[in-house]
Image 1: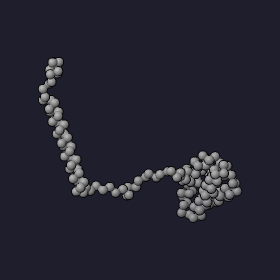
Image 2: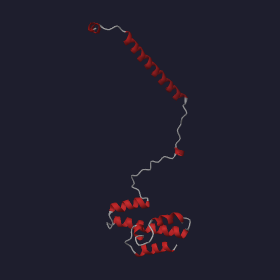
Image 3: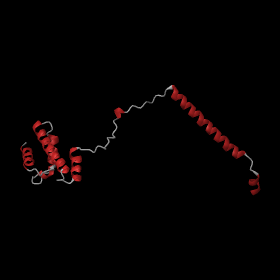
Image 4: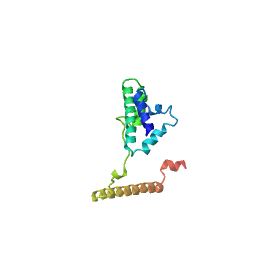
Length: 149
């Protein structure tokens, strides 16, 4: 692909280019073509290798430019994270793959005993509460309450 070779030559001859979009400023088609070529021709070794080489050159330039203070460090970090999959060390991948989850739903005899004990305690508490409510309903009013009526 002749056009890709032209882009690689331009990047090699102009060391100030740090972003692929700069190369497309003077071209009659958008930068999106570059991404489409990468996807469309990933099975073609020469094209795939040329695109990887261009990306490696630009990634290296951004990294070194940020480290040496030639580029704004914040923008260099932003570029590296968004275009080259760089990550901070503190980033944690919290995605869970369902095939790795194994929940044990079996209850062994010891667990079953605990469940039964808890059920019995809940029943006693309900009964005790019911008895207290019945008792308060049926109990005669104390003398101060009777005098108020």
